[in-house]
Length: 306
Image (cartoon, one colour):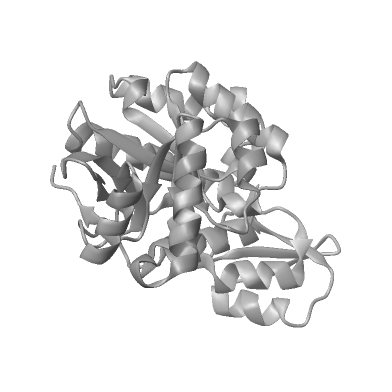
């Protein structure tokens, strides 16, 4: 049975009433406003205690605790709030039939995914949020994706410290819903920002050993494509939308797409165009031999019905 490591089990508790401890001296407070006022004149490391339970926060500089309190609604959402996956269709370009979906995390109170992940990264909660996002995507697959269709699920390599251990929760969720691992394609987001290729190789290998496929997302011209593809051996490559947008009117974009298609075909990699919004872009990608496409032209990310 999987149990969370420190990164995944990190929590930031908030006590609306309690004791602010500065230099081992307790200072009672009765509200977050009062706590904020006390922290505003403190520079030392501090922590809070809930006298009713003896729980306490981690000791942090006063300015950091102030920032946590100012962002407590977002932090509480990441830790305990309700999320869901919206599904965006992915289409076979040769037949027009649906290949599957990409599952995209959404909150119930309209905070953008970007804002959520920035906050999670700032407060050390990114592993927890990434894990919750994967679990919601698997749940959506169980409820809304046909057995012959695939689900693309995003992940951040930086949140997976030890793949053999950290991914066990994801695998247990798949088993809990009695789903075949072959239905899932895990894609690394922001591929061009990957620094530790050896670590990502380990992550990919762990997914593949469990029968899943892997993908590189957001691949563009600034990316050392050949070297990365040879080292990581992804099953799928997703081309960044900036190279697909108006590719029918840009000879450089078209040449780049053609070169990537030739390279991925020679390596047996399935190629997907992201951000397709116009029929002209569909025509170019189909003409160049792209396998799959997604974008607003085919459908926006949408909630699924239970």
